[in-house]
Amino acid sequence: WKAHHYKKMLKCTNLGCLKEFKEEENNDSSCVHHDGKPMFHDIKKGWTCCNQVVYDWDEFQKLKGCRVGKHTIIKKEVDFFKSSNAQGGVQVQPKIETQQTVTKPQPVVKDIGEYEKEQKRLQEEKLKKESQKKEPLKNAEGKFYCCNGGCKSKVYTEEENFDTACEYHAGQPVFHDLKKYWTCCKDKETWDWDEFMKIPSCAKGKHNPKYK
Image 1 (cartoon, one colour):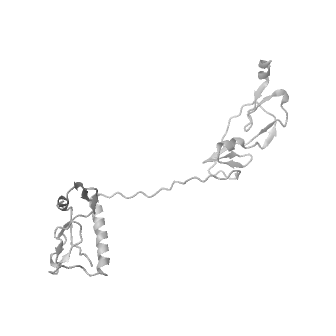
Image 2 (cartoon, rainbow, N blue to C red):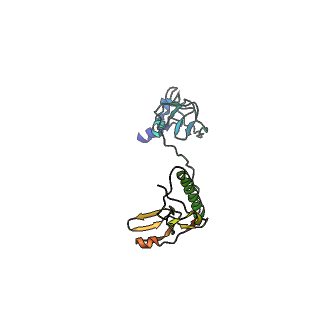
Image 3 (tube, rainbow, N blue to C red):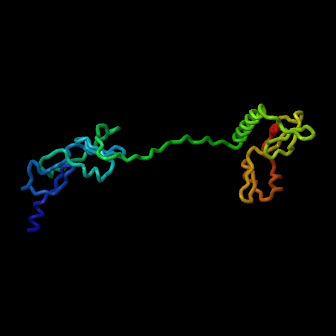
């Protein structure tokens, strides 16, 4: 009896139904299904025949068919609806906001020479603005104090200030734990203050004055 019973059970191939049925019980209102195409666009899911759109797979499977008719066992090729915008969908579930990936402009990688030139230009612009507002510091002999990092001379006169008068570091000093170094000369790390002060300079240019 069981074998005879299972032979009678057929599986419907209508999209959105796929239920088992007995042929003798199959009538014009037995099958609730979709006669359109399944539609998947980004995270949207729906059917072209009933204009319903959801964002979750389980909800998609629960979308009730929009057509009523007989079950069938005729196999159909599933043709997915292809669209660039999935227009016409009626939202039946609150939209899940997804985090959009923002493409950030990539920083321009500069070599050390370009970096030093850029830092020097910015420093000169900063000092120029400061010089218009403040008075430069001088020692008892009337010499200017140089503000360039690691300047060997430390003081200078205007007469002595030519294009390569100052030997200095283009970067910034870094003191981390016991380590001491310049950002422009990272390969010359030291642990002792006197050794740090002796690190050879890596750039040449004009002296720039300190201001009050």
